[in-house]
Length: 236
Image (cartoon, rainbow, N blue to C red; front, top):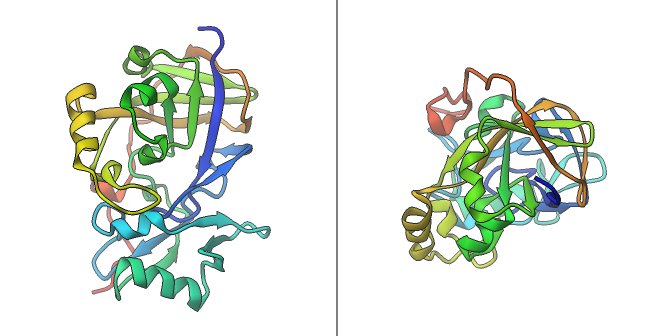
């Protein structure tokens, strides 16, 4: 397919907090460098936008030293802790994590412009890492089993993502619109955007051309506390 480009890049320094747009990103075996390196923990498990929708509106970015900042404060400061407790509840705390389980399924999520246009809502509701332009709406379900060659980087496409209630939350206001989830269910069978993983590291830039090539065998293990992996940060 000709004319496919990288149109957006996103990183989420703190899982379930608002993402930061990028002009370029370094892909590593763990996804985009600096992605989801901190998360919000509770007494018995992670606290995410699924149950603490206010977290999704909190701005997060990567500071010049590579550490996440939360609403203008370094993630390990008391000011950042206060912000997170205010949106996530009194038990919420920020925890650094480099394990693969911090990703819900795999370490990259790729959306396509045709499917997003058909979706009809802000692409940020899908929380993608990469958005591709020039992909027809009906092509997305056929992409698993292929790979995306972008410069020196190579990205495997595993499957289409089963969506959850997070898509119903406005990333700016935190208000919920259940019609969003109904649309995904009725028009997309509940699945939208692509679970992907990094086959070969490299730099990716907005505007880069994308080529589709055959992918090798997919990983034999899908990660994530969300799909049942043990969660080591719970306190009893």
